[in-house]
Length: 286
Image 1 (cartoon, one colour):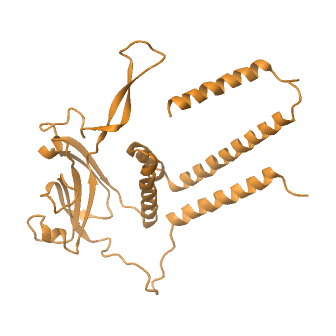
Image 2 (cartoon, helix red, strand yellow):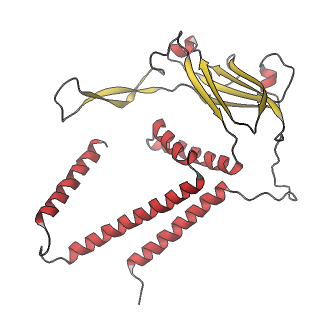
Image 3 (cartoon, rainbow, N blue to C red):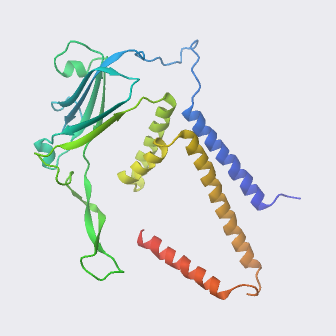
């Protein structure tokens, strides 16, 4: 006697889910490298090393393309401590004229230098990172609420064809932009996991994902405990499986029906109307 289709699908799906969870766990908790081999990458510094950290702004993405305007300096920066900074960023004229603005983090173990120059930035003991502080906002077009005929009840929807300026009021030349910087040490496993997720999100932008969508996905993966995340994936996956099996049983039930005996016509009609309304809602939201 051959196993049923439901049992086969359930078994394959269960094996796939457990394999995926195991892969994520191993990615997050990598095995320690054997120090006897030559394949290990050793850190360039120790946990006790003290660095100098600069946070600077520039209208250019490359740190050498434009002079850096430093807004924060810490000569006793430790890699193993948490930091939370509340800063204010003055916007240069280039940014106010619809230009870009970037934050450059410069971490160096060099001592006795007066300013950040090309020699410091290119030194082997200096590490740099850059992130954009501004981004182009999609210009919003007006749409109308079909349930309300008043003209002042207009809804703003983003347009994909036009771009507007970076910043919103009251951010201007005399009103600096508030900025919060949070630094938290992380494990090598979580760092690997974050880099893989960010690489996947970059490819998803070609499929129509917006930066807001990417931020939401990052929040799900990066701000959630790994074990809670794995349990959530497990429960959600089986919920999808049960939905599929319920849909399959629904089809089998109606295929075997020869009459409407024992069924409530009003309940079926209400269910049909409900599904139709949901379909219209999904179509309206594209």
